Amino acid sequence: MLSRKITLAGIGVIILMALLMCVFSLYRIEEGEQALVLTFGEVTDINNEAGLYWHIPIAQTVQKQSLTEIYTLEYGFRTASAGTTSSGATYYPREEEAVMITRDSSIVNVEAIYLVSVNDAEKFLYNTRAPFETMQFAFETVLRRNIQNLNLDDALLNKLDIEAAVLPDFEELLAAYDIGVDVQEVRIQNIIVPDEVMSAYQDVTNAKNEKTQRNDEAEKYYNEVVPAARAEAYSMIQDAEAYKAETIATAQGDVALFNEVYQKYILSPDITRRRLLIETIEKIMNNAEHKYIVEDSEDGTLKFLPLEGGANE
Image (cartoon, rainbow, N blue to C red):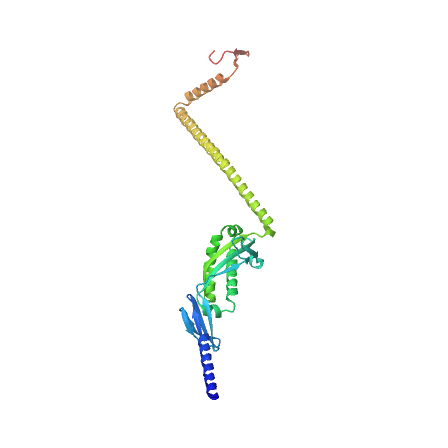
């Protein structure tokens, strides 16, 4: 009788252990999850479909990873407390991450977030020891490289362009790391000049504004003076051309007159010489204010006759 009770108890224990093993060997995969079955620490099976699955307790373990969850990772700052209906969220800066240098050697603080999701649980969990730290380093590398390619003004004003440039570079770098993640989005939250250098930046801004103002004034002066100078130069050129044409015409007339007289002189030298002498005396007499006739007679008497009337008297 005792032996029979012991036998029944043993069977009950075996059945109970079997039931417990069945209970603990079952696991469920939810929609959007991926489960890795590890046998003595090595991945031996991957299950992607939702449902109940079985594994060997102790010898096998199961690791599940969501493929639909979106991880929002912060760079340059951290959230201290989430916002509520009565108060906003609070943040604290991470200066060692945020401080960057632009192409023109200016200092800025950059705050950003990026959204990622897992597409391969095995790569995400086992291709790197710290996937989130790896992504953080990769994001920092890409972000700093893009900021260093920009001038200060471009960095402060063109956040959307920076996002558009960082996203494909970040995706390319993570693909090279092969850690099983997809980049969903990159957002530049804030780019500011640190308080320590704000006064210097303001001086630079004022200098640029003054430079722009001086350039505008110079441009205005140029637009006023240059057209007037060109107009004056054009007028002087036109006057010179007119004087040139007049002088040439006069010279050509004088040459034609001389040639005409010369032809007559060749034909009648004495007559032409006398005529030229008379015409010359007429011109002189017409322009003389006082006219006198002086005659040296044969008897040695100098005869002097003033003519006060004019050339026609």
